[in-house]
Amino acid sequence: MFKKIFVLVLVALFAAPLFSGAQEAKPIQLAVFDPVQLVPADESIGGLRLSLFYPVNKDVTGVSVVALGVNKATGDVKGVEMGLGNWVEGSAYGVQLGFVNYVEDRCVGLQYGAANITKGDFTGIQWGIVNWTEGFMHGIQGGLLNVTKGEAVGVDLGVVNYNKGSFKGLQLGVVNYTDSLNGLQLGLANYNGNKDPLEFMVFLNWSF
Image (cartoon, rainbow, N blue to C red):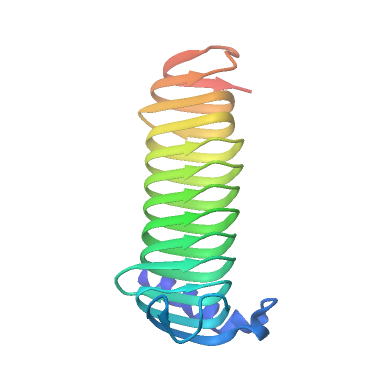
């Protein structure tokens, strides 16, 4: 696991200049907390960002590590974020590793932490205690509670899997709920809102 993370960090760091806009960004950020930081909050970073508590920048491309606090980007993030919290107000492409990971817009990649929240569309893997996507979800959610509020395509693995929309794929948990199912539900309680062929079943429910 740690070898994979290390490889991701190296790839993100050395590939940073290839991303659009990275040539206009500062290559390194050193920060304690905003505004006690080398590069001001309204500028972007393309390379490496290291902080103690709370760095803030616009777009961040590369690797962002905060020791005891939250990484924040008011724009987009492309690369790897590691910290107690990772907060992106735009879109995120890459890996978020933290106790709480939050993306306001679209997220593509991996969110790994206690709570993983994407307000927009999500493509990839959310793995933690609570996984929450409010837009379209395409991929895998694994945790105690998995919530999708839009259309979902993929696999839910959890104690409670809740989809307030249409779900296509597999829900595997103790309790599985979806407004509309195109696939399988395996669990003690399975609810399919489209009632085709059955609205509720124990152990197994299906609709194709």
